[in-house]
Length: 266
Image (cartoon, rainbow, N blue to C red):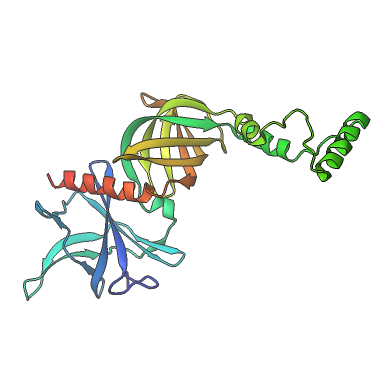
């Protein structure tokens, strides 16, 4: 049975990925029923009418159950009307589902030129080493002053001296942060692909901000893939894996996806 996957049943949430004209779009829906090797969902539609699949579309399905993510590649998509006149979109697998990882499940293809920040792994590691250093022992004179301070504090006397430096401010200045312009090529829940002229290494940290409605979307990740590109977008292409992103990031992806779906229907 090609449609088999742990946990897949009526009412399950499922993602439909549509590749068209070099872009990938995602539609999230719910399984209405499963019949043999055919899956039914409520029709994909908008104010402009029902979504029509093209014969050139490449359609995949993704289903998540617990820690597992199942993916069917190259499914057959059709618009179907049953005997009662109810309309569905149906999807028939052409091969068995494979277990895949979340990063490859869905990528939103974009072309956004924006400012990015970056920090080198070596600088970040140096900061950690500095934080782990032990303090040097006090000189006899410093030890005497410290003893006098402690005695004065016990008596409730304000002991004069040079104010201590704000360690939080010093910490912020320890790791240099640089900025440059880059192109964001694609986005996903777990990471992004960018192109830039600046040369980075594995483990370097990259962050960016994007305007979204009346606020911003932010994300920060480490470089996990490097490709020599030498294109108009930049000399290098980098794959990022997020370790930090704003709470509105997923909603931003969803809204962008809907914009592309509406453009496809025009």
